[in-house]
Amino acid sequence: MEAKSVLITGATSGIGEALVNRYAKSAMVIACGRNQEKLSKFESSGVSTSRFDMTDKEQVFDAASKIEAQDIIILNAGVCEYIDDANNFNSALFERVIHANLIATGYCLEAFIPKIKSGGQLVIVSSSASFLPLPRAQAYGASKAALSYLTRVMQVELQGIDVTLVHPGFVETPLTNKNDFPMPCLVTVEQASERIYQGVLKRKKEVHFPRRFTLFLKLFSLLPFNWWLPLAKRIKR
Image (cartoon, rainbow, N blue to C red; front, side, top):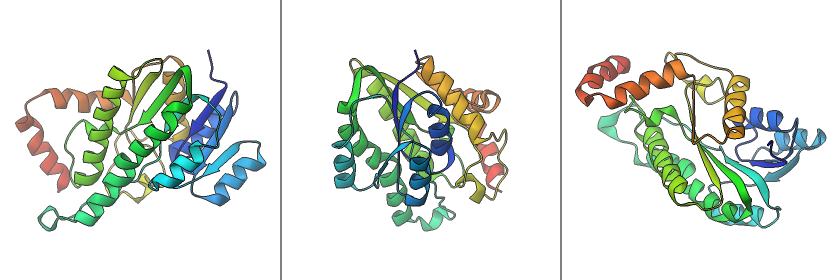
C-alpha cells in the first residue's frame, strides 16, 4: 500500500528533492531543508515544508513538535567533504562531517520516531561508501559506516515500525558534481529516487543501487582486506 504522508529531510537538493517530486504524485509530503528559496517553490506547487537545520537540536525538536504523525519519515540529509592529506589530518572537517551525517541523525531519530504511525516506516539514507575504505573518505565513509550500523540496530530493536536502509552508489547531485575523480555507474537523481521509492514500497530492509556497482563493493568487502588494499591505493593515485 502506498503511503499517504511522507516527511523527507535534505529535500532542497539532490536525492531529497527528487524524492519529494516522486512522492508528491501520490502522497502528502513535508519537504524539510534549509534553502528557503527551494522550499518556497515546493509550497507554490502544494507541498508542505518545514525549514530547519538538522545539526541544531533545538531546531529539530521545534520542527517535530509542529507536524502530525506520518506514514513514512525519510532521513536523507547529509554532507560530503574529503580529507586530502591523511598525514595532516583535518579534525575540524572530520568533526563537521560526523556531526552533520551522524549526530544530527540522532537528533532526528529522537524527535521524529514518535511521529511515525504504528505500522509506518523509517528510511535512513546512508552510502555504499560504507562497504569499503575508500581514499580521502575518512570522514564521509566513517560517518556513513556508523550510520549504516545505527540503522541495522534500529531494525533489530524498533517495534511497530519497519526500517529501510538505503545504500546509493554514485548519484548525479550537487554534492557529487564537486568530485574530481571517476564515478563508475553514475545514475541520475530520478533513477535513484525511483529505486528508493520502489524499495520502500516493498518494505525492503536494504535498498542498494546501481547493483552492478554495489554488488562489486559488497563482494570485495567479503574478501581479505589485503586483496582490496592495492586496488584502493591505485584509486588514490
